[in-house]
Length: 222
Image (cartoon, rainbow, N blue to C red; front, top):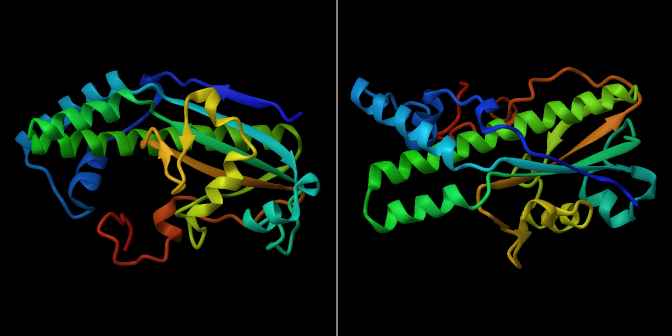
């Protein structure tokens, strides 16, 4: 049986610059004035007190996966065949999302937007921590981690979630998937990383720099 590894990072270890709040709240061109920035800093601190970051991952030999799983997770779409694949799910828990809903009901529009943006930023930081852990695990086995892939990346369809959830025990960190392939808690994400014998071509791993949506309002590169 494949081992599921659960990690609970310290919320204080997640790095989120206040500029990320501006980006996710109003787009990459949005600039906060000093007063607005001060409010964003306070909301960022409050959001950190609400998150319960966790991620779970499992490593699989690709030749033991069913063909439909291999096809869905692009294992067979590479000239260099990966020999292992890591499946990962990250979450911030329920508390922050519940607080976002409470602010929305009470019509605290700005606080709602900033708090939600802080959650997105923390989730992105958590995924980066998980990716570094996976890359280090690959190195310890003398292998080379490929790019981070998942629903919402490139052309990966949302229904790929069903294959991801079949390979990792998401319930261990209280994450579930509904019939529309949407995760609960909402501040959760999933991805996978293929492992190779040979080094992979270096590429900028940040999602904006490899995304095809050139006109996205949240894009941070030209």
